[in-house]
Length: 197
Image 1 (spheres, one colour):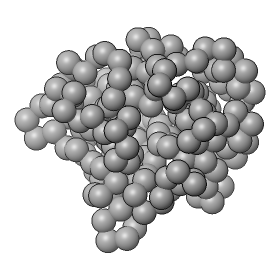
Image 2 (tube, one colour):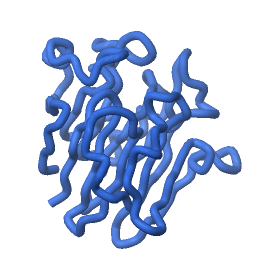
Image 3 (cartoon, one colour):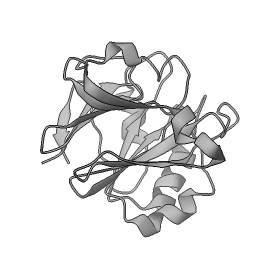
Image 4 (cartoon, one colour):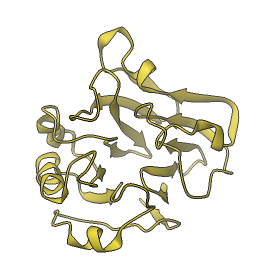
């Protein structure tokens, strides 16, 4: 069974049932000692791109917005054995869509939407057709969507479970804010907690 370990802020680790490991936006928290098969960086802001913190297996694939947006399009990456990564749109006033992406990670036949730093995008309207299993949204209301817009995005995307992250600049987490998020199928994961997907 696949697992998600939430490190805090926008950082988390996905582990497939075969033991392959994917980190998303490494920055804070612990748990970077499990060697990675892939590291995904949504954009180059310091609180998302601390790849050096991650233990890496030989041949670890690091995918940043540069590779994800090569040739001026959102690219897909087949990492073998049913593990795949597809870049999707991410943008707002603080994040240029030419330098920022989200990802859909396919692992153990699950589709996980790693939205990156973003507000509502046009592409979100197409994602419901993808029947996503999990979606993670940045809800700080400063650099990204606020709770209200985040709930609208969760409705639009229609993932089976919606996880609030990136809730407060300078903090690992804000439980009170997470509790107030009025999104369908909300799933709260605390920093340092690992869940089965």
